[in-house]
Length: 268
Image (cartoon, rainbow, N blue to C red; front, top):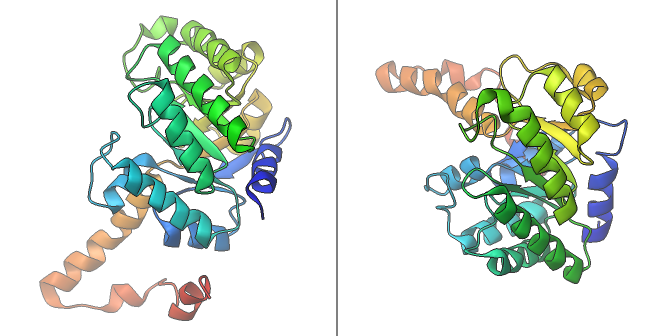
């Protein structure tokens, strides 16, 4: 599929009345495996991608390595791919625009830009630069504006909903398509924000998050797994590896393991 057709598909998957379950990958292999399990689209997790290359989260992964990794992912799958760009990988909006143009060139059809480290108005400028860059590249990039109001003590708890509405409207004016509210789990807040913000709200998997049907009814359009895919994979290795190191027991490795032909066939 072309970049533009994948961009159209990604938007359609998040159209009004639909709901997208979006798993997160950390490299080309994990993205291909998620696609083989039925994922309609995939997203990179900034932390998982950084860890897979031996870097901590927080835009510590070099930009060129980010771009190369995204190109590997989009080469390995035909489904739409969205990329967590954290604050946009740029010292200013112009540099953010350059990063986004290169990501589009690498095959990305969606991005996240977050606001936890900068004022909302500066984040809006970065969103506007990303939109302009994608337009120049001829791709209707899905820009997901992430607010960290439920992740960090940016405002008093009682003010979070109103501030989220203000930021959502600001980001919509700047050219965003979606409004990402990680750690938000209360349906009343989801409903209020969906009714007041002209963006498609979406959420991140956290304990206690309502199921898809309830979220869709509240006005949300997608939920993503974030770094939980990699944490789950690592967690699943802990006991078998420790057992092997302690007494050489190989048994757990042959329980529920994927087959070599299955995985190798993903790349044939």
